[in-house]
Image 1 (cartoon, rainbow, N blue to C red):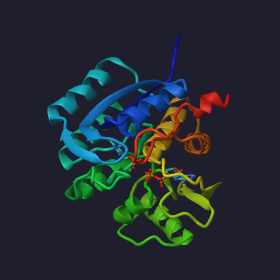
Image 2 (image 1 turned 180 degrees about the vertical axis):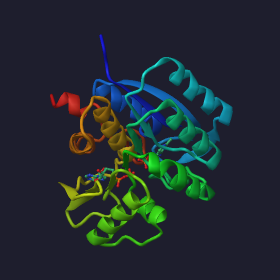
Image 3 (image 1 turned 60 degrees about the vertical axis):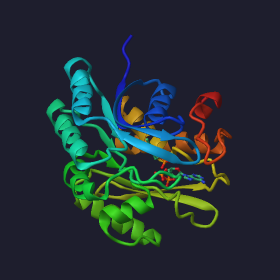
Length: 267
Ligand SMILES: Nc1ncnc2c1ncn2[C@@H]1O[C@H](COP(=O)(O)OP(=O)(O)O)[C@@H](O)[C@H]1O
Ligand SMILES: Cc1ncc(COP(=O)(O)O)c(N)n1
């Protein structure tokens, strides 16, 4: 039986709600075969990131090579890349392997507050990863860091999205979870030609651990299945919204989204 294949290159979240764990659950729910390259192991739960243990660079390189040597990859999603050394190795391998559909989620800070990214790696992220992105998926604080501008209004989001496309991303979605507009959350998509806003009622919940990882992975799974970028984002948005509507009371802090909600709803 043939199946679409997606690869996540990200950090491990021992708590299971974000990172590699969220990505693989999402791939599985969307009928895509999931693979993983782990960049760092975090000791993390719904309340905090206790520690971060980067995987040695050779370990990252060898995981990438092992996959490239043997398995066709339809789409890639990147999350926590941690530092410049790892970014360089990963960008190089994505180019060398000819992996063309790439969702770049520029993970910087966990919902619970700890940095998952070394600030001095910002220029490497911009130079090496942004131009590889079929779509770049920053939240508002990440978009502010990448564009070096304050984002307060919807127009600011559109301007930032345009700037990120000018920096080399083929398309961008700036996620609005950190800046609700009244009762709504608004994500701004731009593909270099036109804008589209995805608007949903804000779900009253603190269980938002892993929302960004899950959304980016749903987009990657859809791309792996051959969908065009707009459709991949539109369906990914429906997937993440359902997962947040049915978010789980797991742990004592920010609980995870419900990756299985989509399937249980028969969608
Ligand atoms: N409370 C909420 N209600 C509905 N959608 C949300 C909520 N919080 C986040 N989202 C959505 O979840 C996705 C991830 O957004 P965001 O939380 O901004 O990113 P990140 O997890 O990377 O910080 C976006 O599509 C956003 O609109
Ligand atoms: C390993 C890892 N990767 C990414 C995130 C960000 O996820 P979120 O901002 O949705 O909590 C995280 N908390 N842990």
